[in-house]
Figure 1 (cartoon, one colour):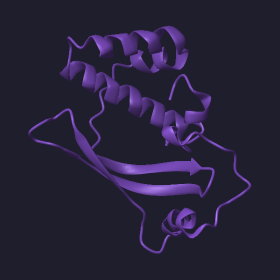
Figure 2 (figure 1 turned 180 degrees about the horizontal axis):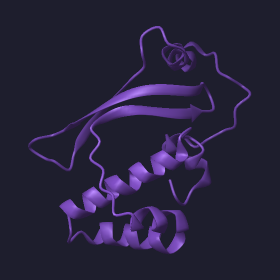
Figure 3 (figure 1 turned 60 degrees about the vertical axis):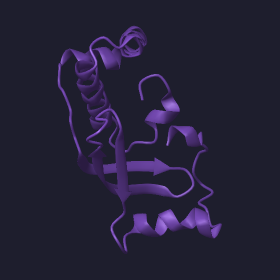
Length: 131
């Protein structure tokens, strides 16, 4: 989100998404204060991203279990997806996230395009691991 420009391009509401990511990272760091990998990640982001430093200075914590995500995918275009997050009671560090397109919406139709072999050709390419 902060170090790869292509990843940022996926989100239509980039500024809000950045704030959400920092808030969730702050939440996870608070849950695992002694995690060296978390400390390393936060250190790397703090050194390399002015935006991360600015958002981190707000000290906001996010624990959003639901909401709406708007993403721009090259193969299908803009998708508006509702999401729900289930945190597993036996392992609170693991979550299952379900994304749902409203029935009959353009987003629902667009999700069916890759399966049908019909793809938008006017969009830029992207690395699928960033989706």
